[in-house]
Length: 210
Image (cartoon, rainbow, N blue to C red; front, side, top):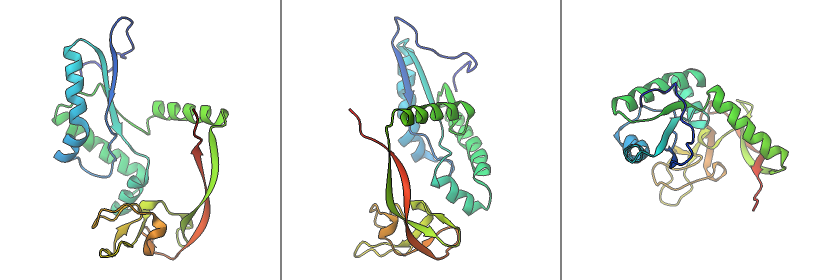
């Protein structure tokens, strides 16, 4: 991490101001070399270059703590999603510190500041009527009493010649094909392995606008 994180970096008139970020890592694993190279290293190199050129650059990143990946990891480790987030955020930060990745800020999507920004963006989208409501078919677990996100569904891959019996609802790890949960053969809930059925669920999407 860079020197004094208590001093905020703001745009400076007359200088080249550059905001740098990289894909936010999920908190469902310990980062390995492939994660470093494929995610944060190139942005770190660019950030260092910008600082050498005396640009007013800021490099920010953080752990992505919202999503199905967190929930499935919590199920695997038999703990709450918050416990998973707290545990793996520290691990991620320690790994990036060891590699001397020069973040100006490495935060969390669950941080109060991040929450305020996201809520403000959503509120503006809603106030401007940029949201549309739609109905789509989703798998529903009768045991868990909830709709299942793609990664919470497992089943047999529908791709001819593959038919892997533990394909995820978003992708088959054996053949690599992207899938929808409703395409799986013999789908089951990863959380409870209970019964399931198809139901209509409501979703919100941002309307296209010019």
